[in-house]
Image 1 (cartoon, one colour):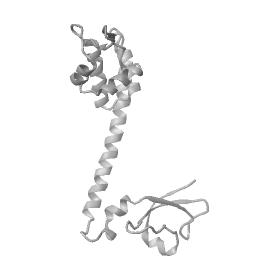
Image 2: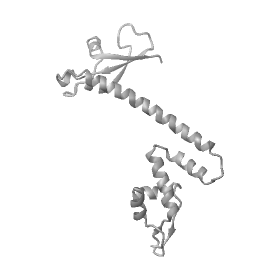
Image 3: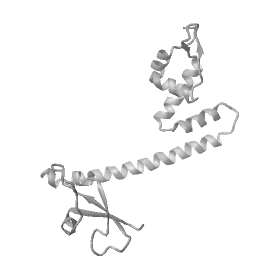
Amino acid sequence: MMTGTFSIGELARATGTKVETIRYYERIGLLPPPARTGSNYRAYAQPHRDRLSFIRRGRDLGFSLDDLRELLRLSDDRQRPCGEIDQIARGHLAEVERKLADLAMLRGELRQLIDQCQRGTVAECRIIEALAPRAEVKNFAPGLGAGKTDIYWCIIPLHNSAVFQPGADHVERARLIEEIAP
């Protein structure tokens, strides 16, 4: 290997990136192609390592490849105002905050389900009930308006292959979640 260069394996180890991922980043243009040795091996230089470390850190923080491509393009002009970079970061922050809100809601729901556990049988398990697939049923129960759709959580027995058949006797086995107008 040339002095001051890295093989693909050395670059992978130095950045904690899989070799296939490095090749992928080259194919999609995130990482410029490296020089080649006389034996046609890739010879990466320090700028490749720095760029790959930037990409890895961005991916660890949840930035999309498109956002990283744009951030890298913008960072190439060191005299440029950073307004566009701020805009990308603010968009990503909004997405992170949305995910955090979703996770906080999920945490509350899980706590509530666990707190409701009666330590009974699987047939009575609120956690299994909450995880069971939803069934969308039109005009499932009396009193629904025409064209209305109700979403129900259905308790589907795990021990047999019976198909859920909507009917009056199943109303007690289903919990209304929301009513959606078409």
